[in-house]
Length: 239
Image (tube, rainbow, N blue to C red; front, side):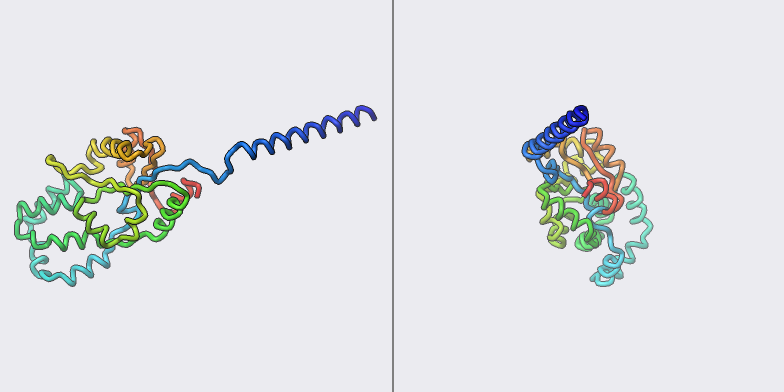
């Protein structure tokens, strides 16, 4: 009988100690909802927006020089230039500049290039996710291959996207050409950009739909998540 009594006394003491320690832990440790604040560097095309064939056709039908444009599009020399340029770059601004150098008559379609480039539809689910990340206190940087001129036009057409971001880092035009994500200096320059703007690169996560871009970022010590869908991204972010 004494052994049973002693056992229960010890058990009560142990349970009391555990309850006390748990109470102390709750008061000392931060609540579960407190998370590390990250900086998310989010790609634009293929992640936030997607090209819209419907809008491209719609603009093509409204073009002032529609017949002339079609004539040039059937010019084999124009396509030869496009094919040659695409091997070097995928940047639309750079492709168009190369076209105008060899085919000056195409300059009149400059505004149409902007319209075609920004004929996009917004991924509404991704927009909701970005709003949620913003609400939770994370920083958002737009990190895209978009050219400077097309970006300026994009800002005018999609203010609801741009206003979500705290900053942006896009393709840079230099005297030696454009520095896109394919360029070895893009992500090293991005790290400098992060430092200059008081972002911690160790807490920066790149979201991109191309693995090659994430591989290049990783070489600079940056972390990344491949984008397949908003649902899969939410699962990886656990939100």
